[in-house]
Image (cartoon, rainbow, N blue to C red; front, side, top):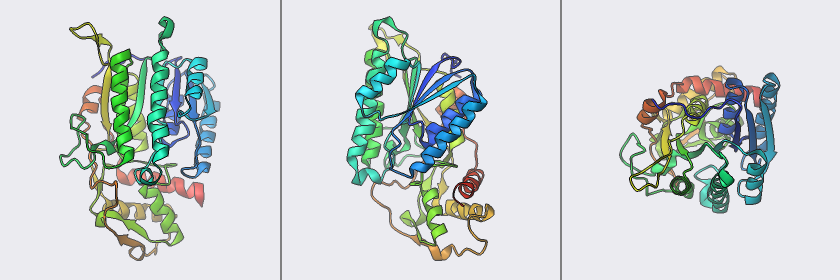
Length: 362
């Protein structure tokens, strides 16, 4: 087990992408579980998907803040793609811990809108790294730990499963995956050059209440409710390591508190204080089984009627560009270093989603 070397109490924590799916849940958990602390959230609130969900998330954070007045929450709208904006945040608030979750998400969107990925995922992350680097200027304590989102997409079409962080990941099949691998390489370089403790987290198919509408479970629900046909890719022969958002957040929270140690090698130069972990369920589910459980839970929650004809609204289609047949996380390093492994079952997670969906939309 890694020793905790980052104390969260009374710290200023910067969370980018704070109105996003994982960012929102992380902020909620930190405000509930740690006190007092000071969270600065930034997000550009772009319209890649329904902005009303992002606004709802921010209102939920405000509610929790009222329940925990000993801590503080400040939200600032802006893009990490704008260097002056990022620099101003670091200059004004001087965060001790940085969690970079801001990114343009989605594999398929990267095929038709590559500019958004370069600006947010590469230039934006560069701006964060530069700000972390300069946080040490003048002998300041600076950033104690930079934690950033990577993705299971970096594994591409690797044949070896489960995917290990020791695997070679040099063959991305989408620009999105390439930008996430790029983030890992950039973080490594900055950790080596400037001794910035950084940890990258490869998330595996995150789902849950108030998630992203572009994700399969959410999109399927929207279409089924409208009586439209859902397309199941690779004729249903895809497997995904679906990971419930609460498990992701618990993993992030534990990782936050144990930064890679700063130490020098035999040459007297810093050994990069750098780490990468998978956070996944370690239990891939077949897409057809997933759809079966989803439909059962949508009926259970009253989103769909008990006599809904699913067979009439399902279509098996070929694989699409940028997709991979399986995602499967080897989480042994996470278990070894943090004593944690996701435990939420797919049925339990989809039940929570279905109940939230009914409350939000119906």
